Structure formats: structure tokens, C-alpha cells
Amino acid sequence: MTKYEEIAGDIRQDIMNGKYNVNQQLPLEKEMCEYYNVSRITIKKAVDQLVSEGLVVKRRGAGTFIKDLASTEARELSMSRQFTGFSEGHKYSSVTSKIVKFEVINPDEEIADKLRITVEDFVYHIIRVRYS
Image (cartoon, rainbow, N blue to C red; front, side, top):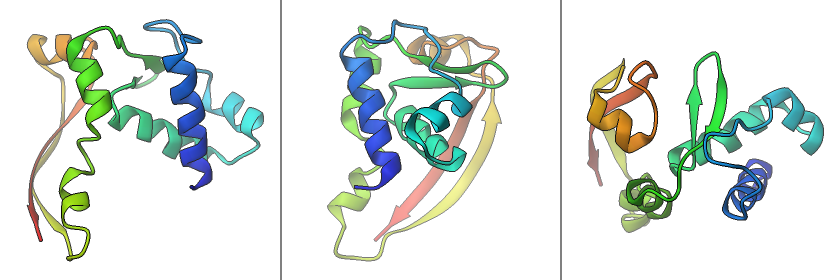
């Protein structure tokens, strides 16, 4: 297990154990670097992993905040590990992706509500095709 995976696991455990409240900001990257004695890149990778799991949300210029895990959508998203499914199912073959569309957009109200963010936040809109 890499250092960033260990840190992500530690923060994930803190979230699940209620150390952080819904919408509470995680410590700043600089503070986590000092606490874990690692580089900023390592902290960024750990936080990015938690974002992909649906546990936290980054708000540009504001920080990283805990999502509401009581919502069904957030809980399902955090447990699904959706970004590893295809690769895991085809681990013995070469997996490639073709990006059809990539945009940074403001979400509409429905998407913002499901992600527990505001319509002023930014999200990635990605359409891709996976090949094995």
C-alpha cells in the first residue's frame, strides 16, 4: 500500500467514525503535510482518492469538505468504487480509454443536490469509451 493510500484510509476512517461533521472542512494541505510528514503531492493524491470515492468535495478557493454520507446517493457512490470496475474486470488485458468529451462545468440544480454541492461549484463532465 502506498503512503497516499494509507493517508486516504486514515482520513476515510476518521470520516466514518464521525471525527468530521457533514460540511466540515478538512485540515489544509499544509497542515496535513506536517501531520503526516509527507509532500503536498502525497496529500493531494490522498484527497483526490477520497473525492473519487464520494466522501469529500473540493471547492475551489475554499478547501475540501465532508459530504453528507446519510444521503443514499453519497453512500452508494462512496461504496461503489466506480472508477475501478472496468479495469478490475479486465485486469489480464490491456485497458485503454478514449476521451470523447471533457469539460469543467457548473452543475445544474439536480446534479448539485445529488453531489451535495452548490450550482456555483465546478464539476468534471467526462464522456469516455473504455476498450479492452
